[in-house]
Length: 83
Image 1: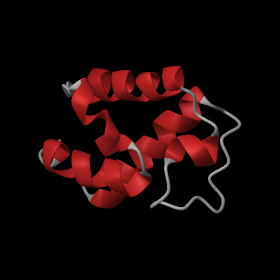
Image 2 (image 1 turned 90 degrees about the vertical axis):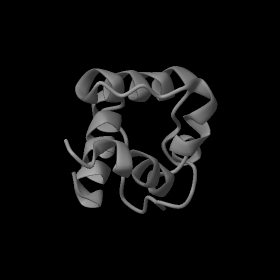
Image 3 (image 1 turned 180 degrees about the horizontal axis):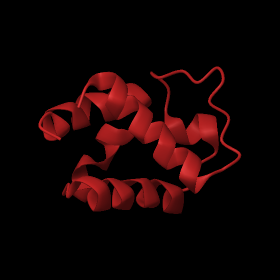
């Protein structure tokens, strides 16, 4: 997957979780939870959906790697390069 495809997948998953999510003006370098009002259960839903779709194992200690849109893409890119 390309970086743009990964970004689109992340935004798609977030939109599935929160239909009211507003991506206009989203800063990819700022924490998603702060910008989109995601709670910890929403965050876990994102992780679970990535696990379900791509058979990814994301250890809890690596969850901070998924804080921003940029960091999500950076973290997932090597894991999804052959998907």
